[in-house]
Length: 264
Image 1 (tube, one colour):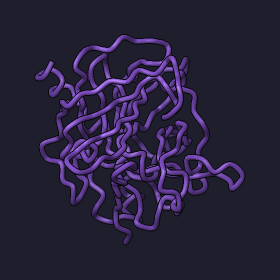
Image 2 (tube, one colour):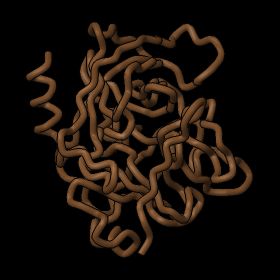
Image 3 (spheres, helix red, strand yellow):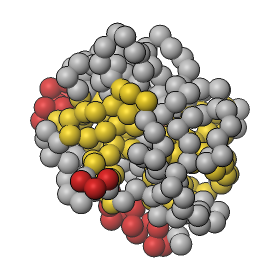
């Protein structure tokens, strides 16, 4: 049995996972391709500060004042610097919006040992103004994620096991969901009902630097459904063919809505 692995790349690095590559010609998000911000305007880059350390996570704008991310991204945090509206982490971009906050709500049953209930919400100080490049996700998961569903994983995570740096450009990988029974073939009883696994035809998946980033189900006419949160990867590494692990959004819809309703 493999073990779940989440490595938080600290200091000028990240708390996350990344995306594998379909071929050896263009090594990007493992198995992924550069994404345009107007394809996924909900995506957020989150730099996290805590006493004596920093890390990087992804997130997704939900409504005009909230971000959905992983609990491990906020655990122990004191400050968040959030970038919206740009696919690039550096350089100038007139569409980029940068803001700070320190308010978050972590699932009360989150376990850093097992990664159960790996979900959190970050609250912005003020409602944000939407643009063509900054928009919330269209829907939270409308049903549980079934086996064989085509989904998109997003993130700025590492592009290989050897690289310790996050990608400068947002990447997207096209994957397919597995049933939890299939996932248990790799990870055994560590897989719980609130978790989900996805994989590709080759070694596509998430890597360090992608944690907290959304798993998205695309619909006709360009609408997008938030179905997962990047959470864990195999101890065999990002470039293995083992599936990547996510928190199931549908499992936590009530918690998301109740937390927002009680703290708006």
